[in-house]
Image: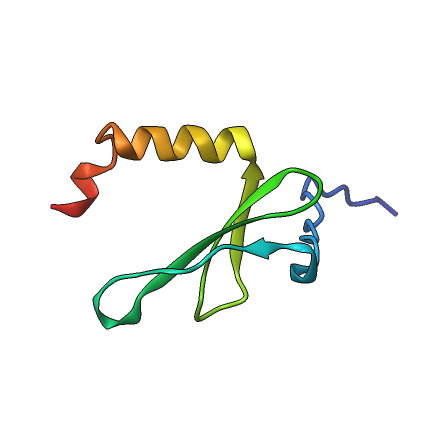
Amino acid sequence: MGTTTSNATPPVTPPATAGITWGEAFCSEGANCFRFGRDAEGRAYIGTTGSAAYVTDSIDALRALISAVKAGDADHLLA
């Protein structure tokens, strides 16, 4: 009998949302809100107020994202 090898990466379990300190939500018309947060380990979070889902990365990565948005690197998404 042969064996099957999977190269699939096991799913990553995100940290519990209870450890995230969220800032005040930013909302546009129609209450489409997003928020930034951070935890004690120095990870940054971006989430929406209508969902428990979020993305996370380092504070430095969030800083780079915000700098790029301020510089206009995402303006093409608004057209």
